[in-house]
Image: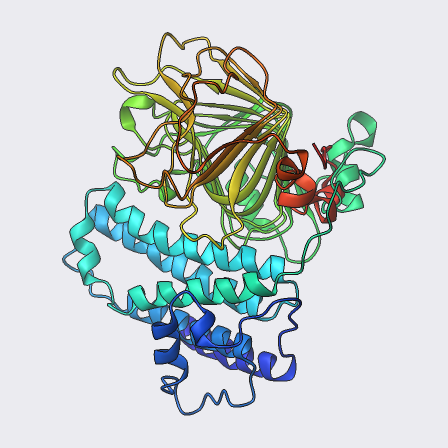
Length: 518
């Protein structure tokens, strides 16, 4: 009940916010329901006065009114899911339902902060994350072969998903045009969205290493023996640094606070390990050994290994799930098999990392650049094919995608002769680009694998630009409508750290080196 009361208060605060500070929009705008992807739904909720009588939208511009309606429906959705009778759900179904509770609560928070932002790019990112949440709620039940339980969910969720698409379109239309061309690199090579203080922290070593707020050590020489205890001790406000000494930490960690930095003693020295998996009853979302939730913004990790040891026979088993906005991973290793690295949602940057897996092992619906990393393909189950990526963009207005830049795709020691592809489309508008990367010869000449029949082949965006290696020949690639051999630097430039991630504005402060342009 306390949470529901808090959500009601949040809605009141939100309404006051948009009345006092109406949204500032730039360039093209959507000013009526007829311009949205789902005009009938829009008209139903706005023009038929569907909102409670206490919520007067007469003084609001259309973009604010669209947010107001969507916010109200988000709170109602969360309340209805919270109140569901789950007594007939088995243990697996209850696990998926708990994921949904978390995801819908996160959605309320994402819509709330998007409505209060005058930065359309931020708003598009946060609404895109909300759309990912709706899809993930459903996925939890399908992962566990419990789809029939979805019939118990409120009927209004279908309309709510369409409201999200409408408000995403509103924000996309008002997004400022990005500056063309390359962005200037800082002198130390880091993107600018990482603060100067974080940049210094990530670059420092030896005597200049940062002073930790908490030290984790299994031998008792630190403040805590588990990472979870140190994360729980983090306060609000500024950067909270956790030094995790060398050792193997067998725990499942959840980060739900912002501004946390985890520093290990090196790849292979500090290891966080778990083995939750779909075969053992976990949803893909819930299987992560280390998970950063939507509220874990500006998370940074350095010099640490995240792994899931469930093995290929247990199917989906996530080593790390990242859902915090403006997250950075530097000199980290991610080891697993199927679904190793869940780039779940929001803006993320990976630099000088090692990523191991078999099927769909870099997957999700984040805004992601993997730069200067090693991607190691492992031996899958007998009869399986390897696919490196599975991007999950469900709406054409989402700003999400996976970009692999200046990296290397190579065989892990156990890989034999197995069909291996760059990716396959998990959702209809899947978007993935490999550019200026070295592709080993075991990449199938077709390059990309269908998900199911002709699904998404004309609506996806898959691109390759100036790759090298014996697997980079594009002459025998798929002939899908959505596949592109990129020849224009201007087109490729859309997928750089500076443009795709707007990385010049936030990565630079983390201390992680980066290449902003091509």
